[in-house]
Length: 497
Image (spheres, helix red, strand yellow):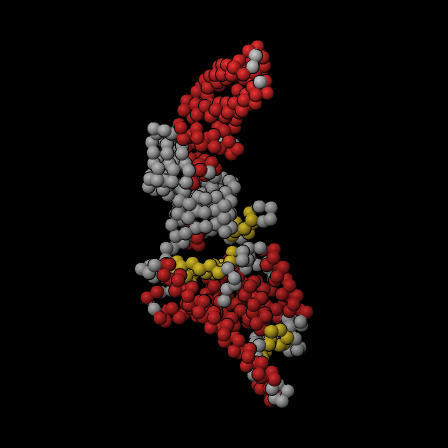
């Protein structure tokens, strides 16, 4: 009987612990600290009476009263109180107790369940026991509101305690908000200086009048409904280093002019955005834009920008506001994939023809050499290009396609600045080792000529250079490649005047 009594006592003790924790938490939410204190003493009486009666029923009364009641009651009460305290403070291990306590406390309270509260104002309101579950809180204001910690918030950005605090105080100075969901957040006038917003979702967020100087924006997610009017921002950081510290200050040597941040980062509504995961064929995309423009001039397509986010290529194209973005994206994607296949087929045909030509190379060697000499063309002052080979006066050679691919990759840039620096250094060493461009001056000339040649053939690449010139140069070390890019861009701009 003693074993049975102890077994039942242990099971009942665990149950009592969680009941006590729930009661104390509930009363804290309903009545504050005074209610929680009252609940602390009430279970003492209940536990003592119940366990005493249970022990009398299952065992000797003296044993039950002296051992079970007196020894078990105090640890049970203290354990329940400890768990309640952790629950009130938001410990995730006991979230289910907090969830149930808030549910019980909210019974009979104001319900906005699944309501559309966009642009509503709850500033300074007491929102204790309010039901906001799955409500539309786009740009809803909660400045200086109280009681949100005791409201039902499932299915909203307010579930995150850091977001709740930010929306209530609008003080996010130096906050770490990496990957935080701030979709539709009302951050009007908020102080977010030096906050880390890397990979944060700020689509539809309202930053009107906010202080954004020094924020880190690596891979953040914005859209045309993100508001940046009247913001205060001198500079931003575009990357995090391997230790999680902001780096790559932009602008690097000055502050933003008034309105410059907005012009750079305010998305406009009529933008088609295409994401490519497995490489990107510049020429196929340029052809697809030109083809659509010829077929339907009303689309009014214009390349807005091309950027590389890690392994992804993101291409943005503006279009006529009267045409749905989804339709433009679908047409561009379909044309791109079709033209990419056609170009691949043409390359196969060319390779096939080259294969036939190589079989006849021995018998036609003399003729080929003479044709080759006739096809030599100047390529700058110190180089010539013959077919697909660039040659200098000393006989050094490099394949045009190989060099062009390297330069395009460096121009497009990447998220890893250290890696891009290493790639650039390797390419310059290659030019030296192949004796094609051994001095900084000849390296600048060769790279500049290749960039101009590629821009002439590929209008998408040309627009990318002209539109992203400052961003491209800001990611470059001060070397021959940066000088060549700067010179090439200056020449392209001069040609537009």
